[in-house]
Image (tube, one colour):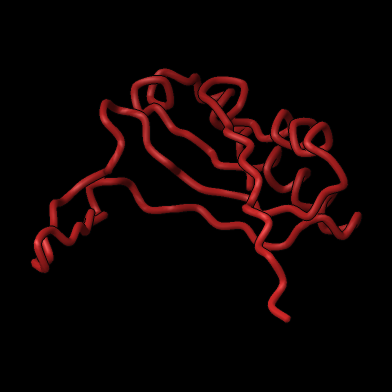
Length: 116
């Protein structure tokens, strides 16, 4: 999974020219990984102000509004890719425009034992 991390202050500081490159760069990446068969799923996420954190403590559901992350950074979207190696995942993450001004975390899924 390629997790796009957004810092709103950095995002707001981008020039109009920089902002204008974000959409086309994502479209280019989507084309590359769609054509190669590596794209499994992708989506953008709403800003943290629209999220709810849920915890269950002593059998009671407790909720709080906003992001689970401390600070300003938030999880802004993701690509799930099926790639041959960590190196390929890093190569694809570097093509995500947000990596140039914020961050993209490359995180593999757990290998689940097969039932049998």
